[in-house]
Image (cartoon, rainbow, N blue to C red; front, side):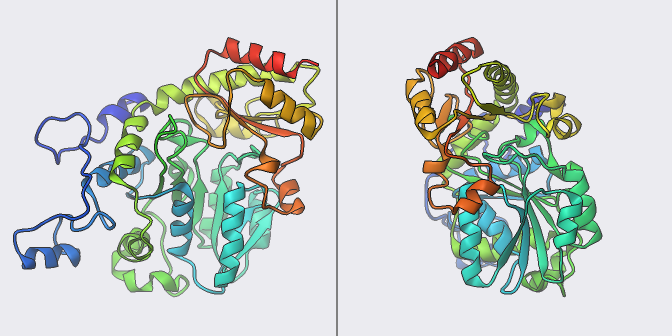
Length: 409
């Protein structure tokens, strides 16, 4: 099956006997059982079933199975948000004294999370360029994870997953890829050597801005050294599945960042059109980027699918049909000009999300990076005149015309 057929027919839900084409919404907190003995076995993971929605729900499980299948993973755990997914993926394997290596051009929320990790004795070491050479040079005996955004937000810096994976596997360190802005429609990072994939499903998976969520997909192929990764030692019997076993039965279960059944349903619904949406979004974004690149009133345009982008070769070598996603950034020349351009747009909403059906624009420096240091902003390519554009499903001709009039002097 090709991708769009796979989305619809690749992972069928057989738990419902009514013939429903979508999993029903089990909007309840608890699940009753015929006896205390049965419930005991369910709680002890010795029998299938559900007990309490914080630790498992049929609607959420249906979404998890579909995400694992689409990404080519062994299993998935859905979370209340993308930030919850990143937090749980890392806290599942890290302890006090451990270090993460990551690129410095990170989403502002992730930078804030890594700052908070410092209070727990977990250190993040940042490299300017996430190349195999720079990452390996930064590794030490405390390094327990390498974390990278596949296409950075909003820097749009693109990593070569295969090259990073060659280094991390040689050094026995898991590679965790945030593939939110790429999605499995463009690339399945596990096939390129990544070990764990995380998504903010609030974005392109959901696709219409109706549900917050996140998901962690475990490739199930990493060979865990249980002396090195002490947090997983108790789950030694699970072998290569130790990560998901601890995640579901311990850290995620205890912290409680579960996805709601309603949001799982909406995310499953959005997932079915992911391939079609990404194809249209990517083509429209490339057309708009080319138009803006020719506009004399725009200081510069950044989009990895442009021939002028330093990441074009990385996009061409990894992404389906060389598609570069649906985010672009432009520099207006000053903060005042950036605000004026944003406020003159007719079709774009001034909003902080990405991956909506509508085009969304934001001034990152004054919003999602408002609490970042100047050094962090520079590292993330966030400047006072920068505008981030999340291109939607409007006709590209209308968007091109709208941005041209908004940028006119």
